[in-house]
Length: 354
Image (tube, rainbow, N blue to C red; front, top):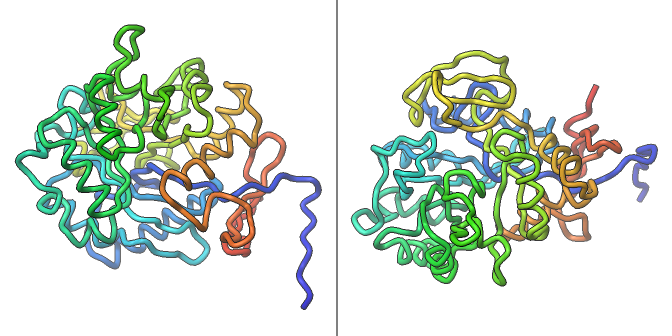
């Protein structure tokens, strides 16, 4: 058999990027639901946009909404493939078991406590078994450790600690209960202090969890990003935490099921209009890689690892995240600056920069 040979003229090939935390793009937020058919078409639109950023697989984040709403959304987030687009790997539920004092842009009126509401009530047993792959929660409440143990042991869900005022010791107990990650370190948690390190102090502990950071220069100063990355490069994960204004022009946009107020987009920054409260970012994952490369001084390959191999290891992905025999032929072609030139899925080119 003859195989086609493609000359990339000395460009770099890297594994396809994995988008661990995105709330939506191009005007579509994952909490927007009209009917199954429209929702699937919107997911497909997201998947085809993401390949332009080098993304070949993504998890859809559902922030804090009512149990009725979340149970209506989750059945549509079963892992699935899209022709010419990134694969949906399942759902990330960020809430409702979060701390009101660290609510960020979440609606604290919808927060619930794990000692009074079971995960089956909140999410639905079928969704726990089939669709939810990652859950962010605060570990400091009564019943939190039991919830962590149930999610990880009973349902095989990866648990990440975040939107939390927990101290370091509670964080250690959360890890011992089964949590294996931290969500957007330094954001929506107590600040790192030399005598009270909080959850952020876990990133350099002997049994450090995986931890995500938002490298947009808005959520974290470049020096803070560098400190976080250098603490544990094999556990550091880059996320966009993108919201539905990603890919849209600057301006004021309406709220939705999570955000009751108007939202103002300025470049990659999105805030509740009239306030300094950050809602999310509009950065692309390709820019995240370039920022880490530029600000920390790490190599391009080291930056790429934070959106590929580290995420695959955290999420137990056996077919993605690395270029090796037996894994999917999902990869990106990069120039020397980390710009995405091409994206390939299962050995088929699905995107090429014009």
